[in-house]
Image (tube, rainbow, N blue to C red; front, top):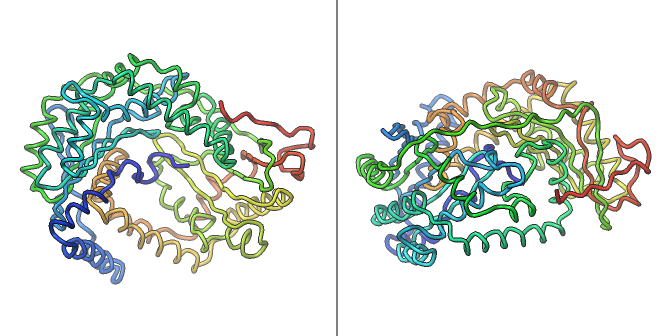
Length: 489
């Protein structure tokens, strides 16, 4: 249930576990511990005094002659190098009826090149003890590499070969599509996944955000190899990409290697992104997915904001207080602790280049569904009409600021975050500004964004549960109007 853009997604960060094991065998864990401790102490100093110097910028930025944005950060605490290549070729670029094209294209990058078969590529990566992975979400595709510093040249050569010279073997395309289709079959057993699929379909209509990045069964079956080749040719361009290098390497060496392996990558004309309009949501609407289960899986929400919206930070604080803060949130206190209606409940927003969804999700007994929805509406209205308390505000700020260092506690995370802030235009000084921005949020800011962006008068409610046992829900005039939704698209 993730959406690109809110945070650098773990799935795109090349797993450092195996690479770190190789390192640990060579060097022991002491330097690793000291490196993590140094990062922690730096942030504790900033948090503790509030007056200490802001953390330094994430790294350095340079636009190379072919248009490739090169980001660099020297991190000597462990002998690893992480490289992330972000390409503006996410599911937003999927043609209608070919949902999944961006993700399949990214997955196939590591499945064979003009120099190497998929097997040879995998064997060489294994020989280096490195990790090379690729995938796509809504807004972008990303290729991640983590490799021992001594092997960085060989690792970058493999990465460049995969990105610049893929062959997209037909048998590998068929295999990937079959794997993805199998995952849809397992989704049928997950009521909340089905609810989310129906939620997105209604919220976004023909817009690409209506579909998961992995595509749809119909879209995947329709993808032809030549369409993958064309997608790669049109969008995998240096002037449409961001390359970040982080680790135990000097800037001069990193730049030299990047120029050697990516300097000959030719730029091209980037096709204009054309998106359909979003369907309006002007009143409460309810959809019921009829499943013979004892629990009702509930999604309540509407459109949220983009990542570039200046109200992102106030919205983040508001969301923490409402339902994003786990046991510290109002929804958890009201629906779980006070009423005992659900084991867990929370609110989420997923901003991207386009307005992402804002939603509240919970699972409760079928007969309690209407009461749970009523409590959701009351808590949303309370946030709009009453200022939050000083204690709630302080708790939200403390958590958001204090948890930020976790985004930087590994070279792979840092490389992904650098690409992320460049993509969304946040600036490499983002970590230093983040704490100060959050500290400046007031109770009035929280109430203002709640009034502006939360809509208890026009929302979408999707419930997956036993329709014959559900009580009357808001947005449904009578039981006979319950709608059975086919969420398979």
